[in-house]
Amino acid sequence: MAGSLPIEPAARETISPGVMEAPFVIPTEPTAEQAIAAIRDELSLFDDWMDRYEQVIDWGRALPPFPESWKEPQRRVEGCQSQVWLEQRAAEGRLWLAGASDAAIVQGLVALLLRVYSGRTPEQILAVDPRFLVDLDLIGNLSANRGNGVAAMIRRIRAGAEAALQR
Image (cartoon, rainbow, N blue to C red; front, side, top):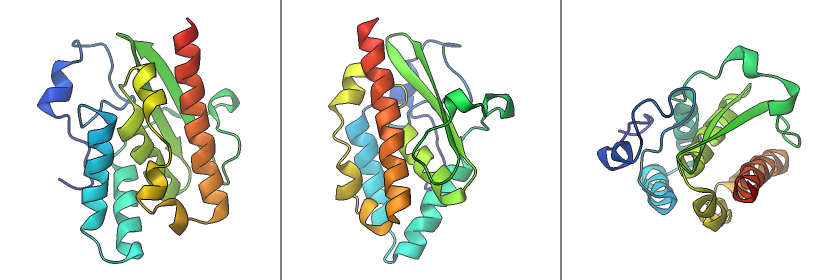
């Protein structure tokens, strides 16, 4: 169902009960590549970008609530025009991500990135070419400042994956 973040059976089977829960995003699709393909399919249902933006905003509305107490400077992503917070946790060899923004469209972009990256191994995260956003034609339809913010979020996620590999 477009706009929701259901847990698919294949993804559910890879997670031990109680390992990760809200506000961390459990992947809808078993792989990042499948998540990107599903996002592409969902966006292709709309002919115009205003409708696509509404879909992105709906994804943001479906994110688990991010705790207010986590909206601290160390979780804030620098380089974003809007305020964006990301949290990463490692469990079972995977990185789990939670995030939020004070802007509706950016909250949707956070949801999109978490759908692709959360619950993946550090190696899987680093294997995802961030140009998928260009291929989805999202970056070209964002303001330069929003595009820079998305790039900053991806850098933060990738830095967490690189750090996890060093442990």
